[in-house]
Image (cartoon, rainbow, N blue to C red; front, side, top):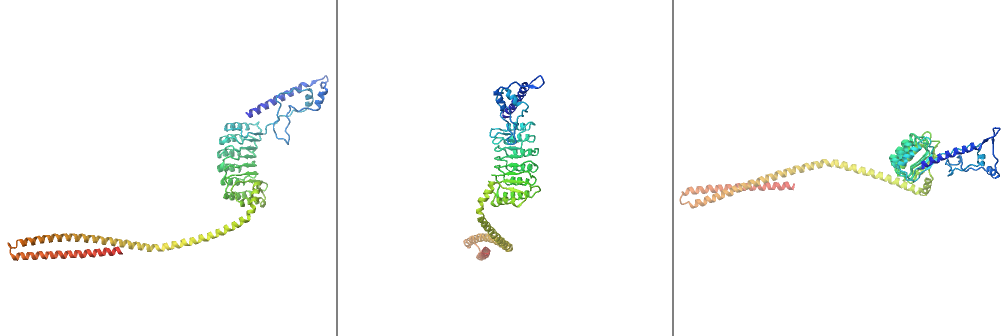
Length: 460
């Protein structure tokens, strides 16, 4: 709607110019000699002619004024003779074109970004600065606006707080390859992160017209910050790099300082004055001080921002205590190195002792295995002896019972048989009984020996 209003206002200005030209041509009446004759001017009209009015006429832009469009009247005023007299022979200035446009926080979304991108890419659009901060453009809106950026004449682009992520930053970085009019790109308070910063760093290495890059509060960590500073080795046109309130750690600050030294030493950096804004990060006092001193020691000028100077001034009283703490840390580091060396020696001794003890342990385990096998064999023999004794004891009991039965039978029937035969039978049975008793004694002896061998093996 704003762009349509601007176009309608431009059309009304052209109509008003045409009417002014027509009034000028009709006010001139040719005389007999061919020269224009002027009707008498009243006294009040003469005083008005002496003070020519400028209402309804657009002033041309001057060098000190911004190229904004002067506000035209709401209605066409009828020109008097004094107006015609004052305007005769003077060229009517052309209306000034719109040079800057601010649409901060108007709720412009991706669809509006598409329309604005088409408008700025038109050949009659001469916008030099546009501010779309505070609008929910998102990655889609940023990509749509970036498509019209190469054909535009925009020198300053502000897209802060526009919900632009890494994809939107990558789209803007791709547009930088095709435009050489952009001088300042502001992307604060957008979560572009390291992927978006890396894409901008790649484009920054080949884009030679950008002077300011603002990435404050952009969730940039060590990787993205180091990539941006590394791109300065190929880009000597950047003057201001803003990386405040990001996620740069102390180690990232050391890497950033190392890349900054390389960028200062690259060819063509002598004529560049670089201002690096890196406040609000976890940079150490030493890193901040070295960034400040880097410009003093090199031909190029690396100017830290005021907040960095204030941080260095605030931390300067603590520098002696920092030196003492650094010395203590160095002493502790030496003690730690000594302790680590001692621990390494003890571990080596343990390893050697273990390697020496392994053969004896192996021998001991083999001896124990042999003893266990011997014990198992003794227990097996003991079990066999016990079984044999049980069998022999059973046979002995059976033989004894049988002999006792036969003795009783013989005693009962001794009167019926021959006495000599009975005596012989009794002797034979007594001999068998004695033999059984002897075998039983031998079995008991073997059992006792087996038990003693088993006990000896268990003790061993």
